[in-house]
Length: 109
Image (cartoon, rainbow, N blue to C red; front, side, top):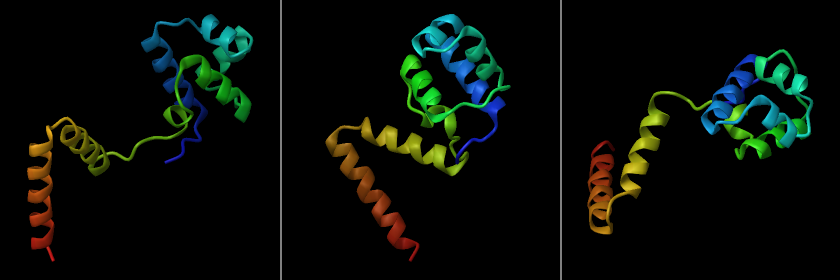
């Protein structure tokens, strides 16, 4: 789902920036923005143009999806977790899990 709330986007940028250990000034410089402009974006008090989003994402080494979308909670998160766990299985276990899932889904028909 697309995020249109500038404060939510700013909060995401703040969290990502802190996780990377960068300062606002470092992100601003890499994104070719003034310190003030980036600070306003992170506070959610300023809108961004598409090119600004792309520059900030490049500076933080993220995709625009990471700040402009929100994952659906509940089932989607569980599905992603299961897929990740399945991907970590060896080939034999993966085949067994897929066969079990197939049998279960057929039983629902």
